[in-house]
Length: 393
Image (cartoon, rainbow, N blue to C red; front, side):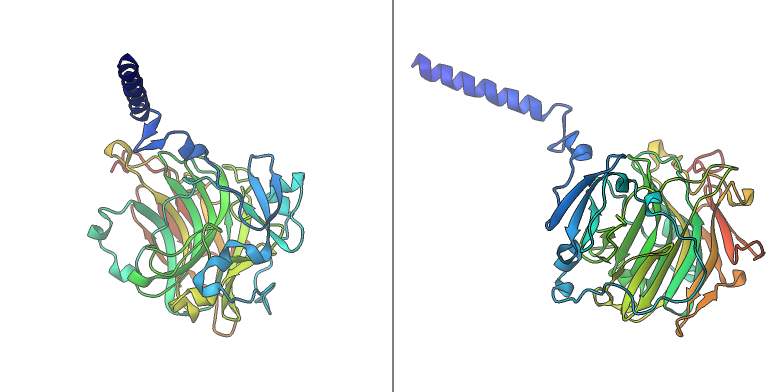
């Protein structure tokens, strides 16, 4: 009998120990703290080689035919295109060593026939980027409960087959799990079924590194789409460029400015992405509805997620963290803003055709410049510091 009692006591003590551990500060909602921010996803299928970069990124060289894109139900029988049949003639961009984006090259490269995929943490990606609706639909009440804030320019009213801009790269300060983004949106469809392909740079908290990113959705950011190669969709063909890698160096206030040129264009029914002179890959037209034909709107600019810490506006910066009126070397900018027409030609988006919009101009603002001299073409400045006396809520 004593042995039975002792066994029951031991079982009860073990239960209390397990319960106290589960309810301790090492767990939140049943998930262990630490495993959330430190857990690295397993290596993807088809990995042939793994490279660890000096910045801690882990790059897996994956068989190009086993990349995540082909898990998409609409791409099961997709024939991969290794390059576009033609590249629109447009603004010249300086070629750059891939190492500006790809420091992991110092420790090795992925062989041809593979693509580099950066392993990501489960909580790394910022909240989905919600796009502002057309300006004719804007009203104050629409944004009362919207934590996504924008300082952008919009170009619409036609059929578009691509977009281009060069933008300077910064490392804004980001707090409280927020993000800060500068990007191009190529858009089509009604709000509830919005189709977009997007590319630019982002800084997220935690992490604080400036990284190149891509994004897409075919249903207004509800169930489809993702960042980078985080889900089936984007087909990568470049074996030297790991999407999601840090961009280095970045611009400094009143000092040297560093830019990247981004071009998105339609070719053979697919939306191709080019960064500087590097063709990265494409979003197949078959995963979209309205974008399967053309875009009807293009946005360029910045976005911040405002988590409203303590009930006030976030101090997360947009762009350089300075307002547009400070100008070159101090504010963030997009220059040589262009679109591709139905004939496949680049056209300048004239300044008077761009519609500026800022969710809260006292927090982040945007100013379109009418002077096209100095090699800037059509351009605008944007950004801001976030929380201040004028940007309190």
